[in-house]
Length: 470
Length: 55
Image 1: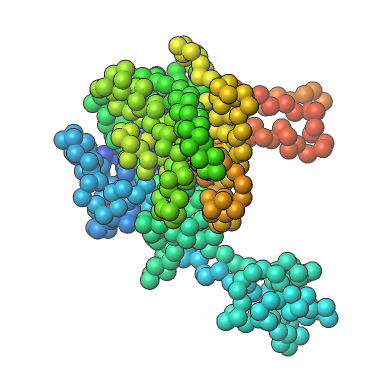
Image 2: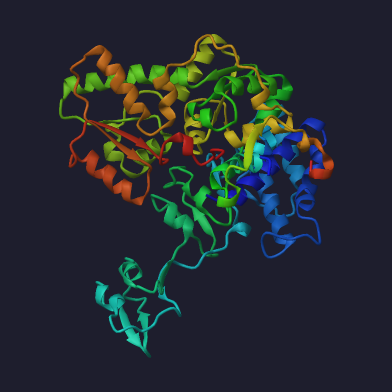
């Protein structure tokens, strides 16, 4: 988790909202990088000028632009801002004509360090010992002793790491490219300029690279500006707050809902109400599939990174994913039934939800960080807010959707209440990574007996999502 | 020595910018300070609106 990048993102977002509210954003926005990295003060990268350049790109992503789409390096943030303001006022999508209009992630080339390719090398800690475990444990005979020291032949090495584990002196290290390492599907690779590039055909928007890059070079494209403009225009926005919010902000979820109301949302709701509907439908769907074919396997559908994974990388298994709409989609339905003029804003810790929202007509997605920035800029203290008077609190099982196993438990409870002797053989995939992708395939091919597979892209569930606050 | 109380601002701005982590101090106190310091989460202490503090 790159905390330095987290804090700088949040600080920029707070400054952006404050200046927006004060009506000074257009005048100030190009000065924010200078304000944050003044001369004669320490820099985070090679120099303050490099820092300022990266900060400019961070602001560009906050304005909603993909950094890959930059065609004019001299274009100021103020003129990017003008474009967004104009397009939103005319009711147009500000990013419509751009190549990466659908991609919620973007790599900032100037921030990317172009990490050297992963390899296993012997360091000077090597003692050239008599036992030579590095040599004897290497399955490819890539290690030899030259001049009293272990040397690895890179043309033979398969980077298995056996020598790294075997060396008693910790003298062999495996260097990595953190983004490539973190990506479960091989979607991020260095391009011809040595800069990381995301292949959006493959990317499932799980957000692992976003969190793992030590240089903070992967950025999330925000809809903050569109939301602020919609609020200012007087549009009725509804804050649909994901169950994962419970442990994110100080105070209770009811206090957070009041805070959203104070921040300018016309309506608020907890997405857990949508999760209740997901539970009912998912259970019914399971029973129906089971009665048709007792040997079937069904997977959950509420994690959008998981749905992206199946759709893009194992389309042959797509029929095993439940067709039940996610809690976000049900929440949208509930609010639109109440008032069709409402604009829906999903508030959560997830990058992939941005791709699901576009497919399912949810107007905007706001991350917890961005919501926090709005609250901070508007001096709304969650802990001091009164509890929002809910019509009724959502069911406990629905509020638990944000943990790993939460969906399974909800479905089991629901199934038991219908048919007490129900047989649900559930398994969970707690976090999508390179290894668990292989496990998922085994499950879907029926090699591991199960009929209900829950997959969550983030270990522990949504509450540890890429944009969570802790 | 009297017990020292440290108030940690958990107003939204501070919370976002690191106060959430400061609350973990309590669990990580060095042996000699254990039992001598207590931490209290406070609603916004108003520092975030002070320009001199980086407002």
